[in-house]
Amino acid sequence: MSEPTPTVDAAAVRAAAERLRAARRVLVVTGAGISAESGVPTFRGPGGLWRDFRPEELATPEAFERDPHLVWEWYDWRRQRLVPVRPNAAHEALVRLESAAPEMLIATQNVDGLHGVAGSRRVLELHGSIWTVRCVGCREARDDRRAPLPELPPRCACGGLLRPGVVWFGEALPQDVLYESFAAARQAEVVLVIGTSSVVYPAAALPETARAHGAFVIEVNPEATSLTAMADVSLRGTAVACVPALTGAAA
Ligand code: OAD
Figure 1 (spheres, rainbow, N blue to C red):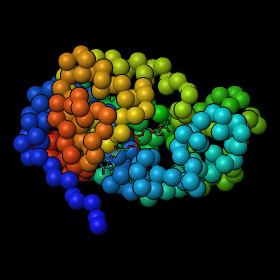
Figure 2: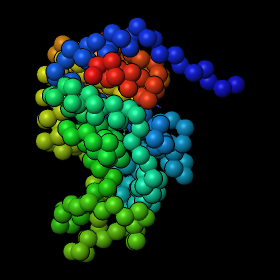
Figure 3: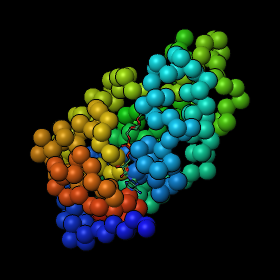
Figure 4: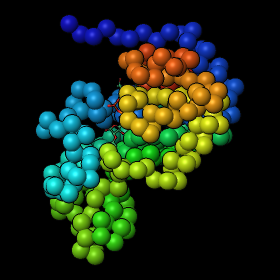
């Protein structure tokens, strides 16, 4: 039997849209769910495993030290899958929201770069970018959009091993990104949380921080999460079903 389609409460959409329309300082926190309808599998949903590995098994410095080739195979596979992927109506709706709320900031856990491709300007990539490579020797970082990469694991001109420019479990988030996103959380009037299971910290602490500082919390997710209980409005629908409705009414 197939899952019932979640229904989105129209009154809740109107209430949330009204809050968004009235706010100047909006923090949007996104996770893998916003890219799901573009065809990118989420980490903890169907299709999230690669060769039976969970992300926590491969997205670590220890896994890379043990087997850089295996870790790069995973990232190279993910990069190849992203090549034809386009932003969806939810990414696009956030671009419109940015023009209506000039102090809006997106803090994304996604490494796919789709907010930038859609045209959002103020985006903090909490977990880095899958399109960046960084040398473990000389530490130089640069963009490399080739997919597949011609050699695995790739090497830097200095001879050092290159690693994906992402944040792994057990690693600190970039200081500046962390600082700016938490400052925005403390100042936000509204925080809009889209498509994240809210289990990976410190990203999951952003809505909590915003709430503790008085922000109105709107969640968009087809499933209940650990954030749901503290959300002022929790829209039980997909990003494409909810976000354009929220921002259309908000624009
Ligand atoms: P998860 O895979 O943990 O969660 C995705 C969330 O999106 C779930 O709560 C789904 O219910 C929801 N979802 C699924 N389809 C959706 C749709 N169409 N619209 C809206 N929501 C939808 O992904 P994240 O929370 O992003 O970190 O995971 C956080 C971090 O864990 C990732 O950044 C990555 C991962 O391991 C690192 O690699 C460091």
